[in-house]
Length: 83
Length: 480
Image (cartoon, rainbow over all chains, first blue to last red; front, side, top):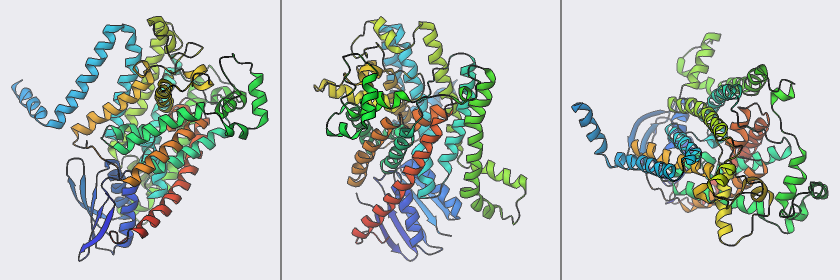
């Protein structure tokens, strides 16, 4: 499945990178956050656990708020509010 | 007691945990079967069980050395680079104890330009595969089929590189050919046919490999092992790299989070500590891997002493398994954590079964042999990593059969092939040519890492270009 990134509501975006290994998920997440405005929320869906570690550290370093982490049994759905 | 039983029942009620218990039971049963055939298979099982431990720790810490260099450039995250440095420091300490106890199995790599070139090709490849050689094994244990493709690509590309002969033989310098001929090797080996044989016999064998202790005239002494090998070659560079990582990749965010306007030395040290512990899983995995990698070398060294052998080939011959041994009656048996050579043997063995004559080259025919995978001791370390990682992934609910996208599959094959080529030119991967070397006093590993850093930097630039291009083609589904 190809990666998708779309605006799904007012200030809300969805990035799906399931099926992609490192470094796709973290690089697409970085690019998606760059595209968004401050305060916008990104719903991120991925299934490569090690990318999660990098995305977590990336959010911490850049001050973005990772406020919801759903473990869907082998895949993940995270919500990130851009600083 | 009743409480414990209830807890156990509850743990096993989850299907993932039952599968994990099944994998562990499978490894135990296979181990007992091997021992019942011949107790000397203990030597092979040590590799297998250390592999299981490595796999558990790698998955626990999501410990992939590819991301150590790649994520610095791709997303400016130092998490894995820090974890790798912790593992290097710990391994060097344990390796020193093992050396002082007289059980070290380590041999330094020949130092030359090939180390940096191989590291650069390997570093370029890992950006596209999503994992280093060990990382691909542990991710395969998570059910990642893209990583399985990477392992196949590494195996076959190496097997082909070391035995291929053709027009590219003419690309190597004539001086290497002359030097290879002068080695006067046995007639079973065709050292002037096949560029890798010419490269090995005509170039690498003319180079010297050494440890820092020997370089400083302290070889064979306790102070050489402690000061020159552990401190100068591992701990001092690790400290410098950690400080640089903190300054360039962590400090800014840390200062913002603490809200301090001026940082004292105490604050800076607290920041450095915060960086080292920011991912506890990675830090703990680094500590565990450092300690167990050293212990592995100790146990294998002690077993060689016990069986009075220098190489597993001696033991295989004594057990009646002659097939696949090199002309020196040896097989690949590093005695410590290593990845790529046993994968090359898997690929080489399959090609050999298909009728390819590849025992006339130096790599398989003289040095490493081509044993049946069921008798390949380091091969079982790699299998152990996959199984150990699958146990950990299952118990954490992270196991999932993951079909790669077409793009990931192509990257896995192309990147894995480059990793295989780089590993053979550089004499190993990030484990054998870097991790195992710098921790045992061989400075060549830092040259390899420098090559990996350069290759990864270029790889990230190419990857970013590819990403922009593919996003532009896919604008209907992607607003990036």
